Amino acid sequence: MSALVGHEWALQLLLNGWRAGRVSHATLILGPPNIGKTTLARVFAQALQCTAPTPTPCGVCSSCRRVITGNHPDVRILDTPGETIRIDQVRELQQELALLPYEGRWRVAILSEFERATPEAANALLKTLEEPPSYVALLLTANHIDRLLPTIVSRCQLLWLRPLTISQVQQALISQWGVEPSLAELLAHLSGGRIGWAVSTFQDREALARREESLEQISNLLGQSRVYRLAYAAALSRNPKLLEETLMLWSSWWHDILLLKSGTQVPLCNIDQTEHLHEQAQHVTLDQARRMLEQVEFVIQCLEQNVNARLAIEVLLLSWPRLEG
Ligand SMILES: [Zn+2]
Image (tube, rainbow, N blue to C red; front, side, top):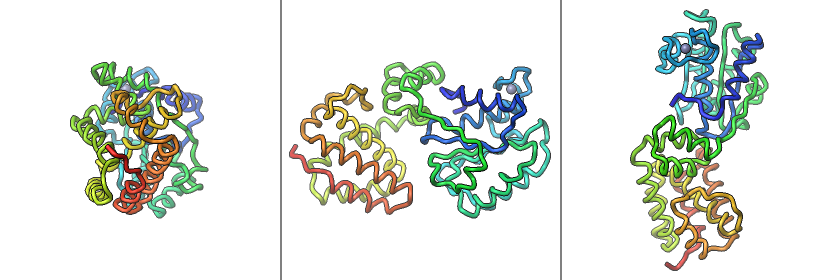
């Protein structure tokens, strides 16, 4: 994905500084996962390297195209979700940044989700942040500012991005990705404004089928014994991708139930499940819904810190009430 949606103001802000000669050598782009932080960094890199006369990236010149395909010699992008950023990767990057740009005026380096860096790797990068070569633009992204070294944060210009609105996601899915309108509406609501999630779910043909299965399991689990729940937890914890999707679904599900129980007018997330949600809301109390949401959120946080997944899901599922079907 390379189109910038909803964060045009941030690109403008970065470009204005650059045009005014106030080049910030290190920018830290912050915000929730999958809202377009790395995309913003890529588009900014394009804008810096673009050879067309207009200052925004044209998207079609040779420089722009090579940034998109990852083949521009002066743009280095380290974007490997879920993997640790190691010190040798930072050192290799630093060797490159020590050389003058091959083509343009700038060398750009993008390091995605920098909280993935080991302490050694983060410390090594500090040196570059302290004395960046004049031609270097370094862009880091992070989902959690509190997981970065304070010394990293203090040496960067900070840029906070917010999730997009539901309608921004919906419009972009239709106009830029050609998604059929009713599917775009559903994906936009499910995404909670995270455009990256909406696009990758659209592109993964199995994703919505997996969601259907997980939805059926929610009602099923609530009627099941401890033994069944433990077996489900064991199976789920062996599949990290499904586990992540399921937890997100559970979170949105209990959030929707909580909204229904509290009678607020905020739009639901699972808009295709309105009937099912209303039905289930009759069987749980407001307090139960709130607790279940809190517990799911807690488990999501724990798993980000590498807690044993199976144990965490077991505890979670055993805490759910048993409803008689
Ligand atoms: Zn261009």
